[in-house]
Structure formats: C-alpha cells, structure tokens
Length: 318
Image (cartoon, rainbow, N blue to C red; front, side, top):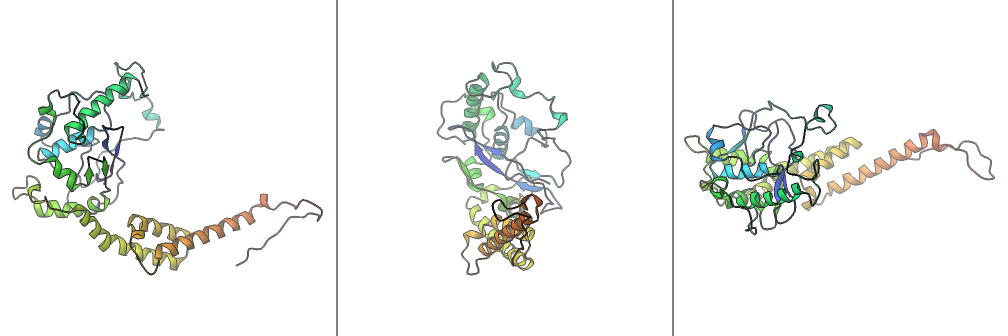
C-alpha cells in the first residue's frame, strides 16, 4: 500500500505550497491495521459524512489542481481529524501519460474563462486566476504567513479548525513556512515510527483521534536520527560488506543505494565502506565496458597506415 509522506514545496513565491509527490507502494510495515500518516490524498478518501460538512472544498479556488490536497489535509487536521493509509490498496488511478484510454480525458484548465484554452502559459487568464487562488489557499492554512492581500470570502468557513493549532502540525512534520521548505519524512512515516509514537501512545481512550496536546515537545528530527542510527545504517553497512564480498555490479549498486537512503556518508567511520564500494563498482564498470568494446566486431577494424592491416586482436589483461 502507499503511505502519504513524500511532499515538497513548489510554485511561485509567495504562494508556494506543499505538493504531494508519487508515494511508493510497498509491503506495509504495519500490516494488521491502517497506518497513521500526516497528509491527505484526494485519490481515495473516505470518512464519516461530517467530514465534508466541516472541511468542505473551498468555493473560491478556481483553476487550482495542485495544492488542493494540502489545503484539505491541514484544515482537516486542525478540525481534529487524523489521516490513515488503508491496510491494502483497493482502487487505482491510471496516470500513465501515454495511455490511449487517457487521451480523451479533458483537462480542467480547458474550462470556459480561460482565453488561452488548453494552456497554462504565463499571462493567460487561467494563470492569473490560479495565482490568486493559491494566495488564498496558502494564506488560509498558515502556509504563507507573509501574504495578507488575498480573497477572504467566507474565510471562517474554509479556514482552519480550532481543535489543534496549525503551528503544531508544521512543527511535528518539519515544515518551515517562513522559508517554504519541508524535510523528508520517509524515515518517520513509512517506517511506522509516527504510527507507533502517536497512534500507539496518544490515541484517546474512546478511540476518537490522537491527542496531540501531549506532543508539543516531541522531536521529530531526533526520532528520524534514532531510526537512521538503529535500523537503516546498520542494515546499510551490512549490505555494503556483503556486496564487497559478492563483488558484483548489481550487489554493489543496491547496497550503495541503501547507503544513500540511510545517509551513511554523513557518519564518520574508519572502514570507509561507501567509498570502498563505490571504488570497486567503478572498477567493475570500467572493466566490463572495456571487455564489451573489445568483443564488439565494429571495433575490430584494420589499422590505418603503412603497417598493413588485418583485424586488430587484443587480450584483456588481469
């Protein structure tokens, strides 16, 4: 199942917003229940009916596609709702751009009101409308604290809730709204750390949501460092040692990829495992490339010049 944790800022200042990227679908770390996550996804969402009355789609965000999810998600969180990934995937979307089945689907920016149909180019009506909408969207959820000149129509209806402070959301999930930066949450969410720490320890006795009032001092960055030190980095070091023993390109590439995700290069070590593995991988790739070049008949051409020329034969030295 996919779990929502991959998000980064995009768009133009000052109305930059968090956009959720592709979420990898893998075997769940917690398989016997839905898993707590920080973000809301429009691809599949279900809840009790009061969700759509308390967190309705904003009436005043024309020409917004990206940005909708973070708006709904943060507003829902401040209203006291928690987001969980289902135990298994049950519905799918076909986002493949080259799919014949998708070519006849009209795009929302083709709607009336845009003078440049089928276009999102700068200067079009749709572009300026979208920019104004994103200013409203980000300002209402506290993601653009420096934006004050935005459409405030029914802001009390489409703004934040009063059950949880939005500042706590940004603190816990490492979002800096001043600099418009967000830290990766993979090691915190995908690993189940968030679920175990928040759902496991702070779920209300009646089961109605996580009590975030006790999490004001929780250090998410420290939890991620602990996860790296106790789980990811030992596994990465073990994988690098095994790859050096196997001495094969595939093993080395996979181990180096794990080392990168474990941020192993940030840790000082006497054995220099990542450097040794990278050097050995480079050696193997050079050797394989040279071997293939010598076996390629197109490279075995006669030598030009006065020496006479039959096919040149070479032997790969050890």
